[in-house]
Image (cartoon, rainbow, N blue to C red):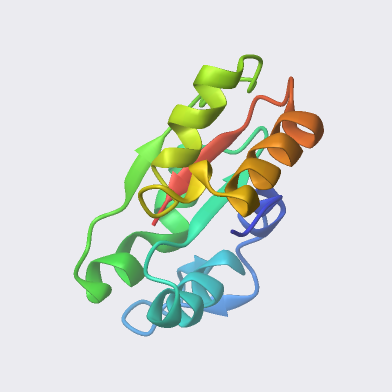
Length: 123
């Protein structure tokens, strides 16, 4: 997971497009390109992040990887246990949340993330 990614979408002066050198690229682009090779389900999250900024940053990089990004917005505030469990079940192997380790993870998610509304873009 790459959190606080909004900071990496703002400045377009770090990198240049190979096909159009006048077109700037934000810092998020090379991170997604390199991390995406080893983390195919990379989650990019941040607050106050513009989807247009993210799409500009990663658009052609993701297209070259072959899988289109999946966008998830307003995943909720993790205010109820059922909602947290349903969310976590999307990312953990079946049955993990029923194990002692899984129960501890779910408990910590409830403690640390309760009330946090986040914006996630899974790439």
